[in-house]
Length: 186
Image 1 (cartoon, helix red, strand yellow):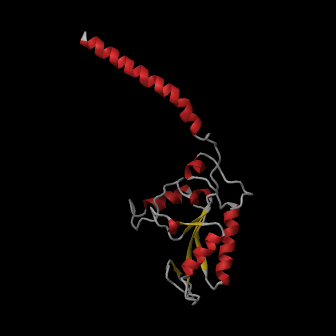
Image 2: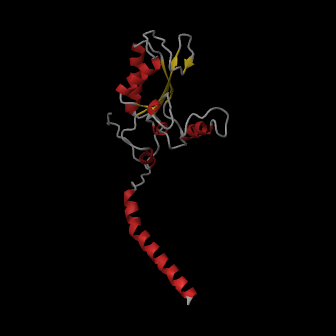
Image 3: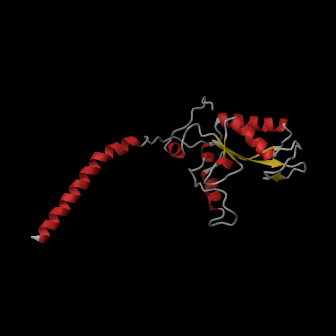
């Protein structure tokens, strides 16, 4: 009698699990955004591009020679950067694999400063224009005024050269094919 009881308990358990999955699955499916087969952008979003150019211009007006070191980033480049400091030499510069960075969707840029002798530096304390303020932080303030989010404000992984405009979209939404409209303004 015991084996029959165990068998019936097991069948009842499977029936309950099956019913729960059957009832919940449509709700789970409805909660996910529909996947859209939309190509991944191959260049900067037009608004990001326009704001990048304005950032360079406004920094120049303050006597800061700003260099944009990265813009749109291919998935291959993203994976190569992810491997840096892990399976390749160097220090870790990103926690994002291909498809997990706003660079991959044309929504992010990285910057540095250029010295008088043409050297590109990532010196956050440099005051090349001699106004008593860090050139780096002056650039960050201009960028924020233009609608960029600064990677230096992140709590989990500080990315000081990184600026992005997400247009309210998460990486998951971008991966699922959602794209900001070209006419959208921050």
